[in-house]
Amino acid sequence: MFLTLPFLSLLFSIIIAYFNIKKNKGVIFLSVFYFLIGLISLNYYLFTYDSQLPWLLAILYGHFSALFFLIGPASYIYVRNTLSDQEGLRRKDFWHFIPSLYMLVGLIPYFLKPYPEKLALVTKILNQPGELYTNQIHIFASNLVNDFIRNFLYVYYAWMMIMLLIKSSETNETESIGSSGMQRRVTIQWLTIFVAFNTFIASILLSSNFIVLFSPENDFSNLNEYLPYYRILIMLAFVMPLLILLFPRVLYGIPQLTVEELELIQTKKKKISVEKSELEVDDSFYEIAQIILNYIETEKPYLNPRFSIRDIVVTLNIPQHHVSYCFNKILNTPFPTIKNKYRIEYVKELILKDKGKRYSLEGLMKEAGFTSKNSFFQAFKEIEGCTPKVWSEQQKAI
Image 1 (cartoon, rainbow, N blue to C red):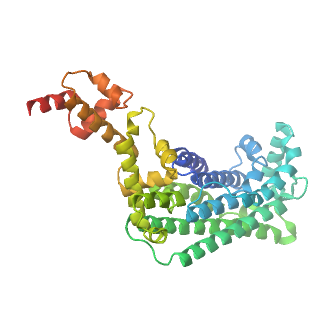
Image 2: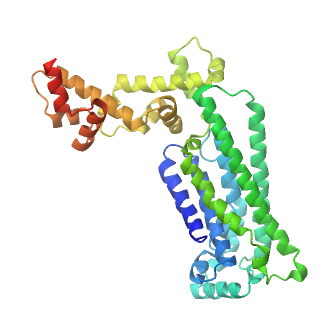
């Protein structure tokens, strides 16, 4: 049973990235974190509880050690970017990758070893668990030292995340009302759970290093007795990404108005100052949602078969996760539904104006931006409760 949990964690991390990367690029750091946590929990499980898969251990052992140094940075950058409503890396973030680079360089000779040698090494470790720490595959330091550095840095990043949450709570004592305020509260609660999870896991990993360091006469042979609580790590590595799937709202982060969005609002309402707009965050996002709808209504971009949410992002210069937030949380209607609604309204206008019957149903479909008959008929029936032909006949009878 426990062996399946790390694999499920890896799968969930991929699912989270696949379905949300276009909405909010900051999610990639969360997915990377979950992927690495799943991978490292799989490593620990195979070494401490299941010795029946030496071939898999030979593939995993050592080859991902450099990536494990990114667990702390990935979680920290995710929390920081979520609180500041930013995407991507900053110029100074390259410092976070130096420990991982150090580990990667030191493992190059090990990477070049043939697979049979790696399999023999893993088999030796399984027979003599102490070899997991006394063995040295890194050219600069032993495994125990490198693990200690990695876990110490992880604890440091956990502390930095706690400081970010404290600072955020101090600078945002008054929360906005409405959907934006609720979104912020939900996200802060999620980040608190996430940081607590990181702090707990980092403490477990660093504690295991201290246990080994202070073992009597450096006897590591009873490694399994020292590390029974890795099952907790495995369980948490599975539960945390599952919570994301159950509560996907947190993936929107905490939307904050950008300068471009404030300029859009000011263009529409010149009497409202920037300062006031910044205070009335919830009202401002309703304004952004209305601006998006006005653009769709006036420019009719939905007539383009390739019209996507990205077109709104580029045209109005609004972050993509803000656009998604406006559709799903302010307007309470997904983008595809609104797009189909406008297309169906356009079809209805054509039917009413088309007294000469210039358009066939296929012509109406293409004119409105639909690319297939199935999607056209399904959208029309969902919105109007009947087929285009029935609706047309009903209008004639009126």
